[in-house]
Length: 299
Image (cartoon, rainbow, N blue to C red):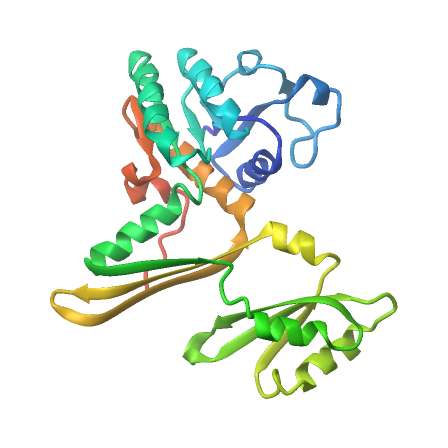
């Protein structure tokens, strides 16, 4: 099987996450990486040790498509240049709402002129979150949708954990497990010399946590955890076919960079099957985004 060769434009957190997603696949390969001139002499991080690093995508051979992993201000010019050189592109830029329509229209004109496909907004938001919202509305047309970031963060439990001995800082989240059981996850940054076993016992013995399923997880830095971790609760309440009390719930906590990379890679797989022009993630049939996912049907 011939692997689809993808160029990674920019090697920040999203670009590095894309490289890991490609390395974990069986049908994709990194054709090369475009880096800033100041970074060209630096060693390539895993898993890109053997990938060529160049200043411009035109210096990379055999590109089937490019993943643009740059700050939003740089995406338009880069995308336009790649399309003019007949390189299909995928990007996940977060642009201000007033600018999105004009940006897509301008890019669409270039893509149609050169008969090349492009996927824009192929990330979490914009991108996959909008698809989930739309699907919920399909199942319950009359109603309203609530979106809450960082799901289940319990301020009261967090403050209680922070006050316990041996704990420098804490963050408590809660998730509803199977059977409606509440599970609490307490991330703790310990005081110097503190013991995790003693801190765990202190948390589980506190009246606020007593009798609940509680997992205490030590971390080096809660600030880093808050930066990397992203959470979402998407809830739709409404009517379907005249019946009230319909409720649909999506809940998750995830690494935003890793999820964005996985979505971009899925969109890149779909590119060869898309017509010329700009496509939003929601325009792509789900079967094209799930090409490498096993078909797990229950008997």
